[in-house]
Length: 449
Image (cartoon, rainbow, N blue to C red; front, side, top):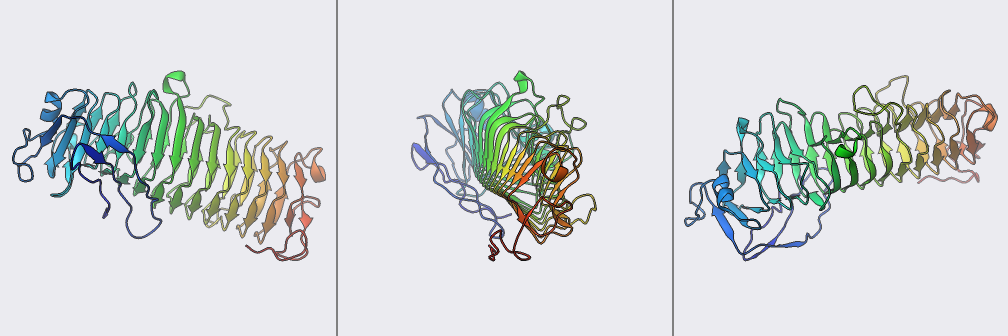
């Protein structure tokens, strides 16, 4: 992978943070100016061969750390540093790449950087080949890390993201590539299972992880709380899902996922008050946005279904299973304004819907467009009840535009309310307000986008 716009070097006492961008093909990362970071007066120089900095006092990063005081900056020049760097105090690490990449390659020694302090910045490094460890490890008891413009590649997993949340942790403009080396938690770009609060993960690039681009699997206890996550503007290019379990009060917006090996966004249970908006998800193997309660594979308390989440204005297309699925007790969620098209490419006869409700209760499905899906536009199973399905536009779906197998005192003898939905085909009369012609809107006029 070729990265351009690498972090610039500190030319004086002020370092301008720059950013890593994605390759020229595929979705582009959104670029934006970053805040300036004021560098303290003490700058400790590291050069493994003194080729770029003949006067550097240190040839290893750990030696510079051992000599440092809180607030120092450690400026590292081009080379490959075969060490695992433990960071016990507040420091800023800046990769000076004018002579080439600055590579931290710890092998089997541990993480490239093991951060055990608050407000540590790691800017512009390539961290690779951590065997059995993450490229960068952020300790749970600390916060305020600034991880920017780095390449994390070929580690067991890329970033171990844990934080107390006292200060905001920022992870942006990094590239996570093929972090699949053998070991625990292998195959993840960002992995978190100890708890993380108050973290912003923006404008990163992910490619080639085998399990998840990002996975947050705290056990739901206060000790492993997960909240205040802002996951925005990331590009997942033939990577894997974003997975949340036992998280709340967070946001996933404006991300792009193309060619996921699994779902696009997956909630495994215990996810509440999370907004999923304005994401573009396409051509993944499983489901675009999948809300499950999977206590077999994740540490979810029995019955803690995903609830009170907002799924809004997403574009979901070309997934192997269905576009959006609310499953296994998902309740009181709102699915509104999404465009869900062309799903069911895997030809599984039990999936292939635009939006499906499966044992889902009291959800609102409003103002969505579901078209050209292999099976149904909106499908509701017999175990779903109390849902409101209103003002949706359903067309050109393979079996039915609207399908409801429940029985109750709702619309057309179902256990749900259907109102003001347009479409052509339904499994029970009364679910749809039929359009004037196949593909037309409620008023009989063509409403192609």
